[in-house]
Image 1 (tube, rainbow, N blue to C red):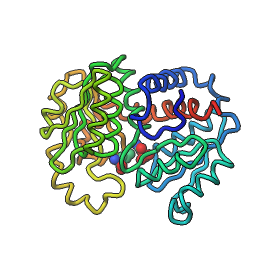
Image 2: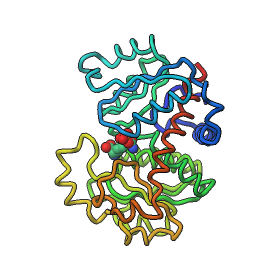
Image 3: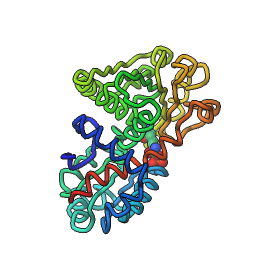
Image 4: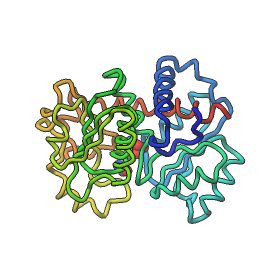
Length: 306
Ligand code: CP
Ligand code: NVA
């Protein structure tokens, strides 16, 4: 892997996306072979937003690779108590990698610009690449090669939707994003994903009708209607999004073998019913588990070569 950071799936050459999956599958099958891969290395984890999965999987992942992770909460004051550049210039003297979960996407790109060590995006308002990589690993385990497979994302055109679009485009998949008016994915991201899709034979579509999005697909994905930082909009969004709820009726429009995905945390019986989330098509906890394996692979590839 020649990339030095993981900020966006769009930045990765296709070969590196496949390399991450290959290492992740090996790490998952033979974890003991990697128990010293990051011996004596340290990951600093900066969080401006809450987390269960991201914090635990990065921290447990570092422990399992023979290294250590340090959780740094909001009181670090990224860009407030101290500039992002100064924080980067300190951290690079002590640790071997930085994982950031921030509001502004620019905070993570600035960190990568100024830190001479790998920076991993653990979610920004714009993107959630580690999540999408874990999701596609989950689909690879179910379906094998994903080229030509179809995934629908219904709901808010948010950070998770954006990274899923970038991932689908790199993998030669068709992604259909179904959103209400005013909640479409970012237009620049749609066009960048379409550029990638041209090279791989993939397809990126944005539609209004959730049933049109889901028709015949291999995987149906949704996420919360109001993301972290959008709490003030939650009541209004709750009026707009109900037609996009993933329930048994919507799932029935997908292929009979279709799986259901959600990055979690879920707001049960808002964006997805209990019946679907807890039903036989749901692979949500496989996705959660795969966060661990895929991020171990990412850390080995980025931090192991230093
Ligand atoms: N899916 C995910 O990133 O979960 P957390 O917000 O709990 O880290
Ligand atoms: N879109 C959600 C994802 C949480 C993992 C958020 O940003 O809050």
